[in-house]
Amino acid sequence: MELLSSTKSFGGWLKRYKHESLSVKSEMTFAIYLPPQAETQKVPVLYWLSGLTCNDENFTQKAGAFRKAAELGLAIVCPDTSPRGMDYPNEHESYDFGSAAGFYINATVEPYSNTYHMYDYVVQELPHLVEANFPVTDKRSISGHSMGGHGALICALKNPGKYQSVSAFAPIVNPTNCPWGEKAFTGYLGEDIATWNEWDATLLIENASERLPLFIDQGEADNFLVEQLKPEALEAACEKAGHPITLRRQPGYDHSYFFIASFIDDHLEHHSRALG
Amino acid sequence: MELLSSTKSFGGWLKRYKHESLSVKSEMTFAIYLPPQAETQKVPVLYWLSGLTCNDENFTQKAGAFRKAAELGLAIVCPDTSPRGMDYPNEHESYDFGSAAGFYINATVEPYSNTYHMYDYVVQELPHLVEANFPVTDKRSISGHSMGGHGALICALKNPGKYQSVSAFAPIVNPTNCPWGEKAFTGYLGEDIATWNEWDATLLIENASERLPLFIDQGEADNFLVEQLKPEALEAACEKAGHPITLRRQPGYDHSYFFIASFIDDHLEHHSRALG
Image 1 (cartoon, rainbow over the protein chains, first blue to last red):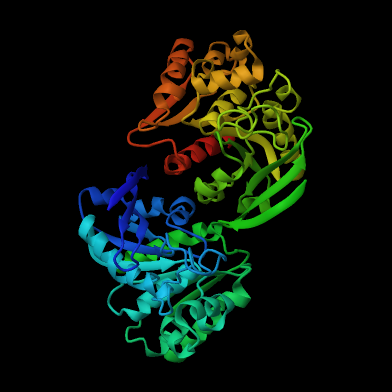
Image 2: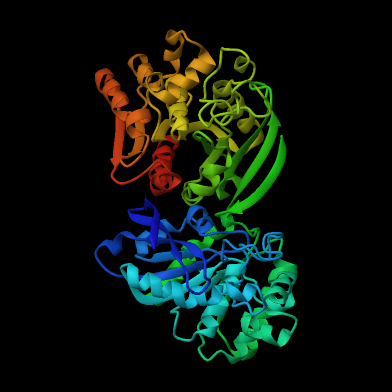
């Protein structure tokens, strides 16, 4: 790991690192916020997964999360949203596929299958790296926005016991049934849609072995609500399976980080309670 | 005024407008945050002046100020940092002169003297526009960062009674005696340095007719501290003149918005107390 920058914030430190990732076979950048408590004790970690077009900096600069994280003694780790540095066909042509759009899955279609293993990176490699190098406990929670909300939900649902809590802002809850998800899954997983199902939170609910409560905020003025996000699909699946979900529809709020900032404190408190 | 966007944030609304400015003779963009209280009553206004390279968006996206502004019932107005749309000699060549570097003064050297009247814009035109078009009182306070901290200090010191309070983050307190200020003042005001003095907070202190307390935060790890910012010059002038100043030196903090975000709540509370 190479330290890129270190910035004091709310008595703690925001640090950015780059490292050679084994799972995505490229150089990856991530950020970690260490609250003041980390100077004298190990602290639990919230993983934050960002949305389309983002990198590790959007959340750190715009979410306004560190005040509450410093109060609660919570570290926050922000990975990038895709591998970087390749030049695959169609990788850099659109905002919703390829670079900055890794969808937190493991690709199976070449050439993306060579490096687009964001699921392995986020679930395995990054926690391993973080827990080996920083004053953190092995208690983890996960959250994210939009594509990253989808990522947080599938990471939690596919890994019982790995996360103490999960939440999301405006997540893509049913990617097998919306344009963003269909485009990405076709490109990363191919035409056999049976292989898509294991990466879809709404479809994972039925067989979830752990009933980890889902905590979700969704803006009602979100331009992507009807066509891409469809929280009602996840809500219905949870109702059918008896899976606990709190879905808050926030009147007037859009898809931006101004929405996230308005409610991030509630999410951090939710995770802090679960992390103990 | 033309509304560019309207975004809900912490129960209030962040709105961006463009308008034809009379004082700077060009189209200007500004942002206003209206807290929830503005739906039913008039609220006081804090003017925020941003630093070099910024526009109206840096503060709104990165300062994390709206949570506390919503709690206190404080509107925040963020102007741009220079006129836009011209193409004067040397206007767009460097980050510290011309576009995004108006220094909140009235230029006297052609061609800048035609439009670079950011002082008139911030002190006269913008408050007039804001108070005529939004549910705000005529109680005003002013703050800013770096070049904008300089701007906030000179606006307050040159206009007794106009502002209820003033504060600054890492301000350029003595622009007649630092490279940023010398370059800007030479370009905007010319070689006669006697004309510079009325735009320098440290030099204005001696004859300030109103003893408005100065509230300043300065990061001790700020890369610009020694060469450009020199808060000790203002501190000495205040001590000599008996002008009240609170200068907090914050160990470990740099010049970034992570520094501003860490202490913005203290500034908003300072202004809210003064605004009543």
